[in-house]
Image 1 (cartoon, rainbow, N blue to C red):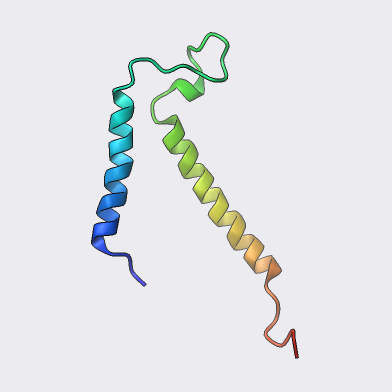
Image 2 (spheres, rainbow, N blue to C red; image 1 turned 30 degrees about the horizontal axis):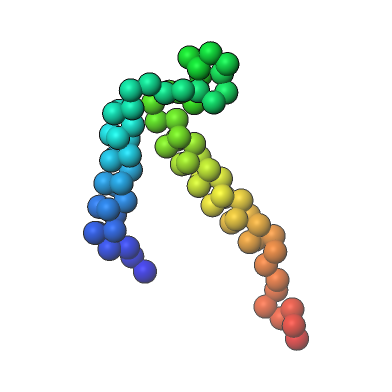
Length: 77
């Protein structure tokens, strides 16, 4: 089943829109660095990249786990 072109346009629009909205933030406060400056989570697009890496890791792990848990066709016979 191939996704509709409209779905892809909406997804890309949401991704680009969230990055553009991040430009409107006046000042980012870091959650990890005590001073709040020069930390990785205060950089532009950090949470978008973090989300992308998380989704890719979930896809890879679930694929490997599915292969490992798969049973043979005649398992219940």
